[in-house]
Length: 207
Image (tube, rainbow, N blue to C red):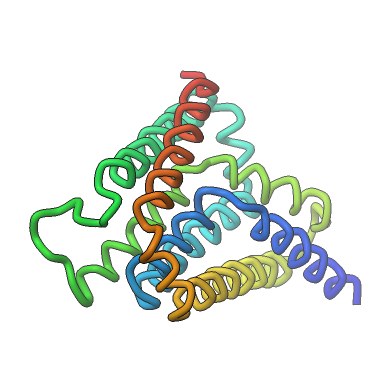
């Protein structure tokens, strides 16, 4: 019974974090509204995989190693900042989504969307410390391997459910039609947000 309470606590804490607006939410919602449901889903699944990988790193002690390797942590932060700024500039300079001269369709677009979501998540090392704080608070230090794997499964399911929900919500015809009417304005606002967040992360990074 105590293990069920532990898993429920992890699910609740991660759900609250998912509901907090951030770059990942912005990326998935833009992909779903501005591209297609499939693109939004692919982006969301990339974000979900990255979060699950960071959760696994936290669960098995990688966070402790990263705490001691401040330069590595700072480098990943800086890499994430550059990536966010690049996403922001792309959205600002190409609000109509024509950032490439060659049309990208079908499987290639979904593959690119998945890698974009995955890259965004993997270049945000703060996630590993978020999961570390949850696991330290809720998982006993001598917890069994099965409990740790179950905790990761809960995180993965939570992340996938949230990503799919956002993609489905923002890919409805009504939302896509609205987005199409105000696309340029939304893309430029989103670009400015990405750039601002990236600049802040870069300013805080310590190499």
